[in-house]
Image 1: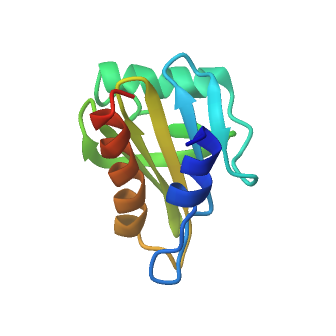
Image 2: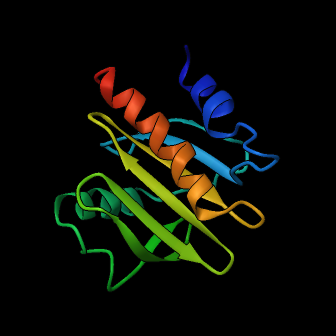
Length: 131
């Protein structure tokens, strides 16, 4: 399966009539593996900051998590595994696997828990495969 198929078929899938606003898969080095059409243009330093937070949990809390220049307030996550952010009625979930970052962005009417489920389920699957 191509990385684009993981984005299209697993991240951008319909869940109870809802779906993510955008999604992407990046390598730990910041290289883009695949993304949805609407995913923001991410800067290398934004991916670097996310990777740093996985290495040093809490490092993004004072500054926020940025994706394509949009700032998300960092909320609860799982240190070293999941970062969650909130902005208004939407937010972001980032799941770290062995080799990749799975990123999902959502907005109302999708609930944060639905985004978490979609992103983290794919992340767990890819982690188990060695990715």
